[in-house]
Amino acid sequence: MAATTQELQHRFYDGVEVRREMDRDETFYAIDKARDLLGFAPRHSWRQVLTDPGVRQG
Image (cartoon, rainbow, N blue to C red; front, side, top):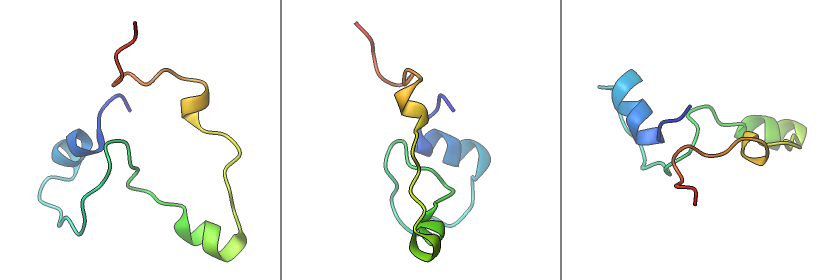
């Protein structure tokens, strides 16, 4: 998504209880359980191949 976490929260999750502050680009869908139970570690990130639209280029 080309929106920040806060923008997505207000647009799609308005009224949902906020239990903690989230970083600008933090996902709502964490892999913590997969990491803890299975030792999963992603090999790739979209940030490695796509330009972040929230960061000014130039």
